[in-house]
Amino acid sequence: QAKKAGKDRVEIFEPAMQAAFQAGLQLEADLRRAVVRHEFTLRYQPIVHLRTGEITGLEALIRWQHPDRGTIPPLDFIPLAEETGMIVQIGEWVLREACRQAATWNARREGLRPLSVSVNLSAIQLDQTDLPETVAQALADSGLPASCLVLELTESLLVDHRSSTLRQLMRIKELGVRLAIDDFGTGYSSLAYLRRFPVDIIKIDKSFVDEVGDVPAAAALTLGIIQLGQALSLSTIAEGIEDAGQLNELADGNCELGQGYYFAEPLTEKAVGELLFPQR
Ligand code: C2E
Ligand code: MG
Ligand code: MG
Ligand code: MG
Image (cartoon, rainbow, N blue to C red; front, side, top):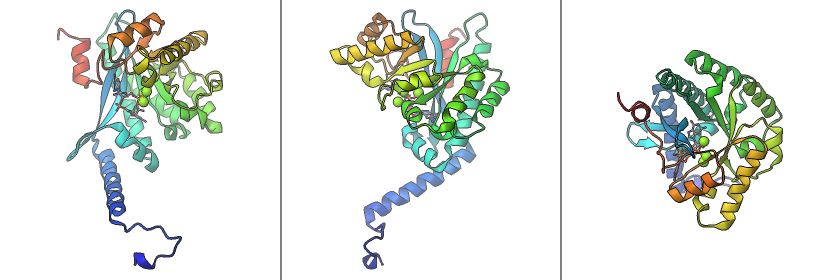
């Protein structure tokens, strides 16, 4: 009956499209099952003080352990989770699990500076009016101090913000939680929102870090972002450091913190335990 379709009807019966459509439906059904059956797990990537090499915190990064397809990275399912609204439930799990895990590690680190844990937040989550309560509950249930939690937001989330976004962020800030801008420099960077929103940390996108050692313009921009951070009393974290050249360039430029494969890739909970508590 596709042949009879009027000119304004969408043809979904072309075989390749049909296959893609089916695959999308399958993924959605799988994702619904994954939420019910708790098929998600977190990896933790250390965030390191560039001058001392000390680990100051960890970023929680979600993985989907699919029963047939193996480990699925976030970029392959987070967009669908956002479209379907499932990100709200998934995101709450991430928040609670990351807080619980960080509190457990900190309890074993008596006498040492507590580690912070960073959790990525999606715009859909910020649209939920009860997000501040959800965050407060995750902190209360885990016992993690609010000062140890960082929520990462993307630039686009702030640029396309709703009128409620600022109020939501203020309420979260009142808890004592810190906010970071993720992938800084990749969006329509309006510097105005650095003043408007109560941000504490700038995460310099990997695309700058990649070229910092060999492209003068990239180095200049990176140093400029670090200085901007300093001028506004914000911490700077360089993302995706992969070699010593990049590290030296960033440390010389007074970038405070960094993360990347040069230090460690995202690690399992067990591997982090071995890294933090080597003798046990
Ligand atoms: P992101 O928050 O910018 O996280 C950094 C990504 O860069 C991670 O990818 C990390 O594994 C990768 N990475 C870190 N160091 C290096 C490096 O030296 N080289 C290279 N090539 N890559 C490095 P991942 O884990 O695949 O996550 C991708 C994105 O998915 C994240 O980007 C974040 O936007 C999103 N995401 C991850 N977990 C969550 C979550 O729990 N909730 C939400 N809403 N989004 C999440
Ligand atoms: Mg992030
Ligand atoms: Mg990032
Ligand atoms: Mg990214």
